[in-house]
Length: 367
Image 1 (tube, rainbow, N blue to C red):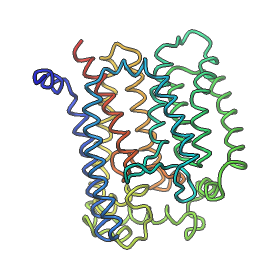
Image 2: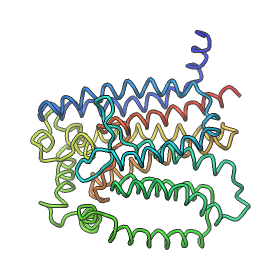
Image 3: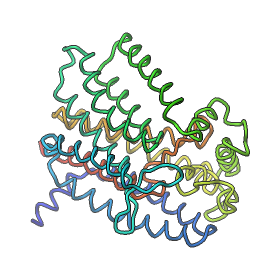
């Protein structure tokens, strides 16, 4: 058993792990910094984040020990479980800021939408790994569209526009990697536009429509819908080269910047750690992504390849949207920054994703 553990750790990709730990460490430092000026609740969030990190790291190592091939055979059960969670949260979940998206469990809040992101990743990885590019691609679009449409619909009913959008963009990215021609791109774009317009006018709440409209001009109504973006830009711009220092960010400490531990933690990093801190975050993400991509040429299993691709795409989309809305390039849609933002469900799921990727890598190194 001890030899097996040593051999397992020997094949572990520590570069990926270290890059991830750097991101987690920066996030924890900033959550601690915000807690200095925001009272007992913020301190409780810091303590919870430490617990989430501990649980997530344990699960990461446990999952890396497991053979990723088991996810292939268990996919139907995993997908069914994910859909049941989404139905359960609609019926019995907690409503916070107009969204019924959390389940109370042992004093912690579980967000099924975060779990379902991983569920969809596994389902699409299984489908694409078994599908043939040479067969009718419209059939692939239709089948995978059905796979993602159910969770997106259930998530929109909460309503959680951000998570539903993440799954939709993830699906498009996976299709693009699998291979699409211009006609197919046009068809998907047209259908997506119709669905978006339907959702915009008949499904989304007023505040969600306002968020999308604010995207067209983030500077309008700076004391209303555009307030968050305006304060985030001010925070990042005031950081300079090395920032104001942990605990000395005026926008976050004086509560001008809302959701400073979650959606806008990148702005807090920019204010307190400056260009140096922002660069460190971007470099750590770059190392993480390039290292995962590096292993694709060393994996000879299609399912494993699509799992790693899925991890890269899912994490990149969330990172890109979060940073984009922090600097005013994208609307505020409530997307956390992977490994950095406060939040148990998202952090633990992201750590599980790295665990799955490590499982693929470890078995590739054994070949």
